Image (cartoon, rainbow, N blue to C red; front, side, top):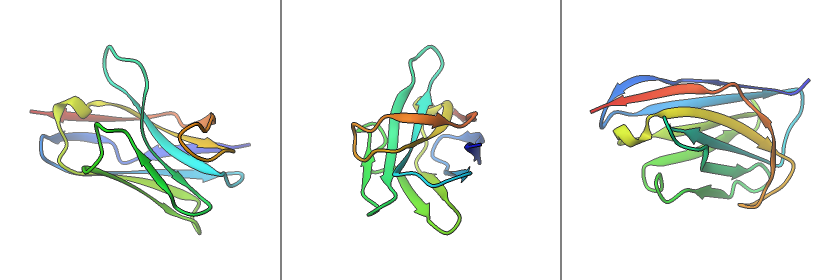
Length: 119
């Protein structure tokens, strides 16, 4: 019954911004995060947030440009992406976990939303 639905992807120019949203239904989770898979690359961690205390974690490649946040009332997580680069082009996936921290295992995944950045 758990569903994670991403939205907000699109085609933008380098330097532009996008905000991705992920709405979770069915239940709440300990952590939620964003992963991305670029063309020809493996899926990689981008950012995560603890639902308990709001602690955030970022991959070095996005730190300082991306911000993850949450809306507890809506059970929704956001990824604000600023200063987008062509290297950020990927399918972005929302994920949910019963655990906390960088070692958390993610068992629930959204369908993905495409972000394309043209240079």
